[in-house]
Length: 124
Image (cartoon, rainbow, N blue to C red; front, side, top):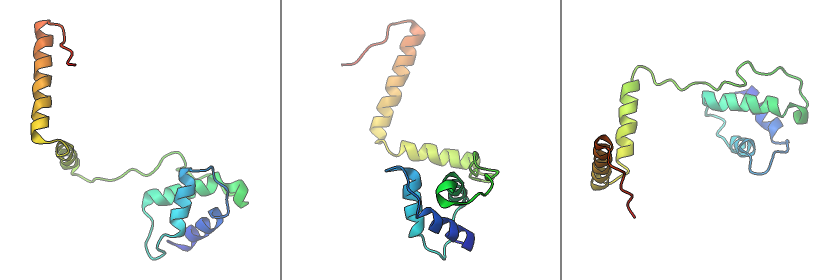
């Protein structure tokens, strides 16, 4: 963390947050964050956003950050197809292969019944 971020965290530690709010957990986590490690772009954005949101308790009159309403977008680079395939394959891995095959078979049966104009069978 740089000096500006450390200043923001120290100021936010004194604020009162809603019980169980994400801001409260975030500030508590940042208090114990390793100083040598830098924050991710999203953490930095949320820190600046929270600092501005609680400006009256902190006592500063800074300007609203330009990107207050738009968090940074994750950059996946040129491999979006690869990321999508990995996500699809990863989700399929949560089901046993036999359960996945049964789901696919039921879906094919429902599609065939729909195409034939038959009413849908409701399993008990």
